[in-house]
Image 1 (cartoon, rainbow, N blue to C red):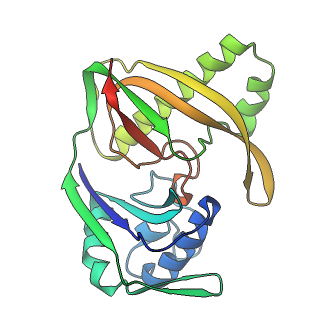
Image 2: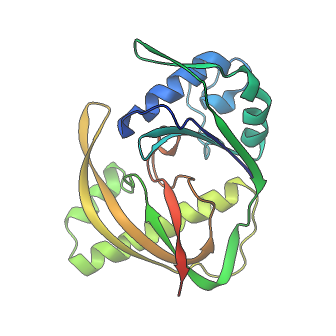
Image 3: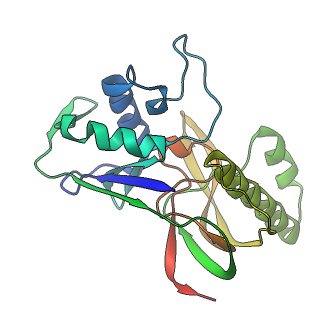
Length: 220
């Protein structure tokens, strides 16, 4: 899988500003490709795993491109000379880009991943189910949802999976502000027998910077 990371080390934003990054780049380059915003010309949502994602990681803005999205970020790199977030203009004296082929798939070892931003796991239907479960049942449900998130990511990049994916989570609940509402998110880590690229998102609203993961430098 090809991954491009575009990072702006001199700019500081809040984690919740990921959607503002998305708005800026959608306005700037959205006419070139719907991968920048995942909407049709008439405004309807395109339901697919986002191949361009917008994050704020350790307070710095970051864009992640995957496969076709990775090529688009490389092609537009020299055209990105400023950022406009709300009423503020940031002139880009430094911007870092790294593009590389990264390993993905199921492996015969367990990897530990940290959640760098809250994971939105639940939709309206399974949220109601979750509330009525015991602690052990809640973990089992979250394990299943995360497994499906990982499978969805693999499917989006045409990565065929023949082995069973094993996932166990260590999470705590976290209320998060999303679209002027407070919703339930999760922070913590998980262990799985898969190799996933750093800084991709899992779960809901990954294009806006939720569910960002990073591998721990430790194996079990």
